[in-house]
Image 1 (cartoon, rainbow, N blue to C red):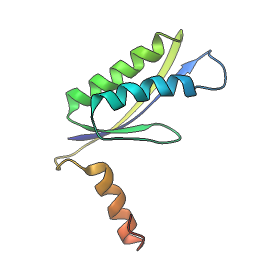
Image 2 (image 1 turned 135 degrees about the vertical axis):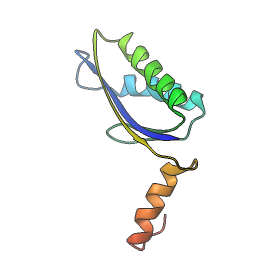
Image 3 (image 1 turned 90 degrees about the vertical axis):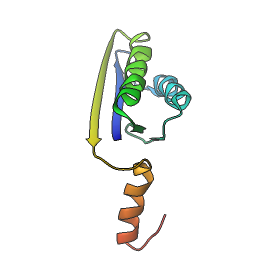
Image 4 (image 1 turned 180 degrees about the vertical axis):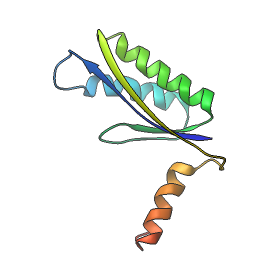
Amino acid sequence: MIVCEFSIVPLGVGESVSEHVAACLEIVRKSGLPHELTAMGTLIEGDWDAVMEVVGACHAAVRARATRVLTTVRIDDREAPPGRLEAKLRSVETKVRRPR
């Protein structure tokens, strides 16, 4: 099980990229994998192949709309049960005594 944070930035399309982010979010949602959209990227959890397939599909979707794309990927690979997106947040919140 991995947790992946990725961001895809189309270059040369102007200042706003929300249209491109929305196209990626549709792909992520259709995957059925646990995910979280943040202001700076997207978190997704699953097995390596499933996650990389989603990231690749998102990259391809944005690349089809822009002549240049910058994709950044960070991966946390650990033997752990599913549900790490929530578990990681709960762990920190518990330590600061503000349960989620």
